[in-house]
Image (cartoon, rainbow, N blue to C red):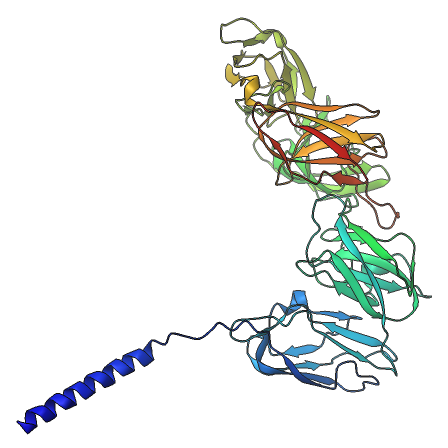
Length: 534
């Protein structure tokens, strides 16, 4: 009897132990760590002077790691070569900075860590830590402050570098292309304001770069740039505004490439509008050429007939002051087959042309072989227009609401550059009712002309625009329902497009103002907007 009791007690004890172990294996957990790491000390101390060493250590109260250092860390003035910073990818209770550069005498250096220092467990950041040292007897304490805007877009980019170049005997405007700045800061990922700190007194050029390569020098192809006109004097209490813009690339033409029979592609950068292409040397009898633009890429196509029986030839390309001679090697390739397609969608707006294009330049257009009929098969009068560069024909005719149109092109209505004609083509288009659209009226105050008024989608696509040289109302009629941003371009030169700036020419981009609220253009709704420009 006692033996059975003893066995029962042992069994109960074992069950309690198992339950206890199970509970320990599933802890309820404590509160989540939301505390940022704390700095215990640094060696040498922050804001030390007469620095002569090669190593800095910053100690924390817990294990930390350095994250996204390439974007977050800004050293002012920049060091070349850059210092070695650890730990990277592992955790440690201290950050070590090894100086690989020969530091300048009597200079204040600042290490701006941004949000790169985080604890090892929850990655709570130590916000915007700055370590400052001086190789001289004192710490420079002056600063330059301001804000960054984007000249074209509603919001500026993140991680914009703001820089000061010292105005001394070595300064020239081209310094931004080849030399790192004297002082630098960064707007990081959530700020549009900047503060360049620990500056010594002097005269400086204030610049900003969206520095895609991270080398603190300006690369026109990839970077945005902004500059303050003239120079600034430090100390200063002024707040400076810099507008970032993407320069139009300097014109350059690429080596020509045979892409089809009697069709050569000339890639380019910059403004192609005045680009001329001419074949040098003897030409076949009856030689003819056409130039069209690719609809998506920066490419002009040079079409020619008859076929040139040469292995190679030279072309001269001109564009304003630009001139270059390029060698081209001909290849035996079949010509493209004619493909004609509509540019317009099936649903037409009331002021929209019905447009067609082709992959080979149009040469002839026979209006008598084209008909436009409405739903009741009633003939609709039309006119036509042709854009030679884009190779697009537009048919203009009066459109009624809730109507269906049939466009027929009989054989021979269109003929391409090589003499090929179309087969019978049948297209259809329709219109909606007026109630399916919205009308937006815009009244401007404090404007100056010429001016461009635009409605843009939330993605930044320009959907509707109007140009004016004198005061008037801007009525956008029968627009597709949706949310739109309203912006106004002060078209200073009156060329009916926005012009960007140019750093070397000291040209700021044309001014753009955005209406502060999103416009809700609903179907059968007529918003009226008053935009007071500042």
